[in-house]
Length: 432
Image (cartoon, rainbow, N blue to C red):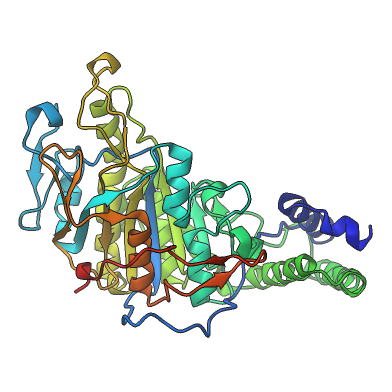
């Protein structure tokens, strides 16, 4: 293989090349998600960012704002859903969220979210990156930006972890593979391929490392390539992770039964519990995804089912973080790509269609005001009536909470300027 051949590798091919080499010589897989900040010296936001970490709960499919966090009085809009009071004055939620209602005094509801993307893939992409999808560039996800600008809190474990999330919205983009998320499928399985194979003795493992190191030096000496250098860093980080005492953070089997009962037993609940463990050990950004919110058909039964998965887990997460003194340092985000229409489609078994013009997202912890409602939609929940918040503004608010320079211009390898939240401005009124 010559240098020109290597340069022609696309990103997945380079990843497979290094991963296969590691598996051959070491018996492990390399995970393309490590990487300390290369912009840690960048000026911080003028805000005194109180948050250190983010737990980003993504409701994939387009969560109905009307049946959850923006209920209305009009029966023709609400259908079967009733509004219930909460622990926060003047904040109501849908009847399917009784446990969430009990913790709304800790939550800021942004009812005036608005987007121009009404398709799932495009809506999820802009929510995660602040940019429209383009065929010519792959934008970094929010977790990649957080670690790029702020650096990792714990140098021994990944700074960005995605649980049950799509790789399309958790990648490093033009920052490179080392800023992509460490992917976790089932929370019970933890971080796969991160332990030394049991069949390999320490002596044999050290011998393989020495052999791989010699091969690496020969290869890197012949091919001075930025991508080769990046994957050399991944290789070293993977070895560091295998020897880290904090690897235990990924094992939720250590949690006592009393804590498990707080979260509940569902997969999303276990993901939330794992997220708490990870931020407790210094992971900067953890995404947990809950799908199934695409309720074109039988909206009310589907929303009730999704809320059963969400309700106890979300309330339990906030309560657990607060009990451990972590909520003040952790920004807990609930986001989705768009809302659902006020019009109920009877021909679709009372379904609701996509509605990007108005929807709701949540913030809690990290210096955010609890029991606070920002923005307002009209009586039908169809249009934003007051204080519109674009997706980019919402993402700028996340950066602001972390004290990161959301308006810092970073140049891509192609020489194009990008920012954390494009031209978005943080909503500073939501902070205490």
